Length: 473
Picture 1 (cartoon, one colour):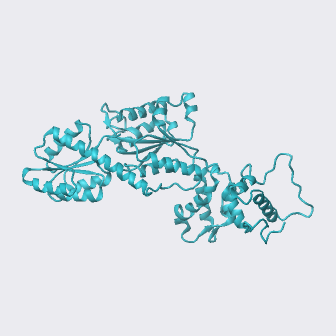
Picture 2 (tube, rainbow, N blue to C red):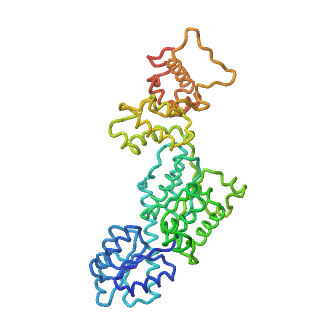
C-alpha cells in the first residue's frame, strides 16, 4: 500500500513549509499549493487522499475550494486550517462534508493524527467507490477487443487486479497487445488521473537506458548541462510500464529491484535517494524461467514482478475474435483513412483473414487492415487489397488438409468447388446434430469461421431431419 497523499494549500509561505515538512517527516506523500487556483491545477494532475487547506485565502477561499473538491473529487477528504475568528465558517464546512478543522497555530500531534484519520477515511471511501462501480458493471476495459474465453479470462483478471497496488507481469508473443492490457490496468486503477508512463526496454541502447529510467544530475557526465528527471521518477503516484523487461542488463535489473523493494531511487551522479510511489507493470515475450536458468534474468527480480501474471493468447488461438478485431481496426482505429468511403470488409476478405495464421498477432492484423484501407478502391475491402503474405499462406491443419496417404481423387469431369465445400459443411452439421461448435471441430474450423460459411451458403437448420430445400446432394 502506498503512503497517503496530502495536498497542503496555504498562502503563507512559512506556515505552508512547516506543515509540509512536518507531514513528510511522518511518512506522508506531500505536495503543496499557495492558493486555491493552484490547488485545483494540482488536483487535475492526480487526486489526493487529503486536501489540507487554509480557510481564509485571497481569491478562492478554503470554503470554496472544499466545495469544488467535494464535487469533482469525492474520494478526497478535506481538512480546514482556521484562526479562532473563522471557526464558525469551518463548522459550516464540516456540516457540508469536510472531514474536520484545525485551529492555528496547529499542534504537531493533532495535525498528524487528524490527517492520518482523514487519509484512512479517504482510502475506505475510494475502495467503496471502486466496489460500487464494479458491482454496477461500469468499469469498461478500454482497448481489449474479443469474446474468446481466453480473452474473457484476461478481462476478469484485469478487473480484479487493477484497483490494487500489486505488480503485474504480462506475458505473450509480440503483437498480442501487452501494452493495451497495461493501459487498461492503469485506467481502472486509483492512479488513472496521473499520466501512464511506458518504455520499451529493447528499443533503447544499454548505454542510454539507465539515464532514461533514472535521470541524472547536472554535471553527472559530459553533456549533462542540467538535471533530468527519469521516467521512473516521472511515474510517481502513477503506473510505469516496462515492456520487454527481459532485455534489461543484469546491472539495471538490480537497480529496478531496489526501486521495488525500497521505494526509492538515485539519479545518475547523485548520492541522494528520492522516494517514489510507482506501480510497476512489466511485460515480456520471453520465457523468464529459461532466462533465469541461462543467467540473463535475476531470480529475485522475477519473484518481485511475478505477483500477478496475465498470459495473452496468440491470435491464432482465438480466431473467433478476428472479425471483431478487424471491424474495430476498420471503424475505429483507422477510421480516418476510410474517410467514410470504405464501409466494410467483404465476406471473401474476411474468410482470408480467418484462414491466415497471423504470426504477428493483433498488430499484424491491424497493419493488414490499414494497408487495405489505403489501397481499397471501392466501398468494401476485397481480398486483393490485403497484403500478399496474407493471401499466399494458409493455416496448417485447416479443413482442406487430409491425413497423410488419404488422397482425394478429382473426378474426370471435374468438380464445382463451392458445391463440394457446401456438401462437406452440411455433412459435418448432420454428423454434429446441427450443433455448430461440434461441426466446427469436425471440420477443423473455428466456430466463427463456420458461422461465416453457413451464412455464405445460406445453410440453415432444417425442420426435422431433412436437408434445406435448396441443397442438392
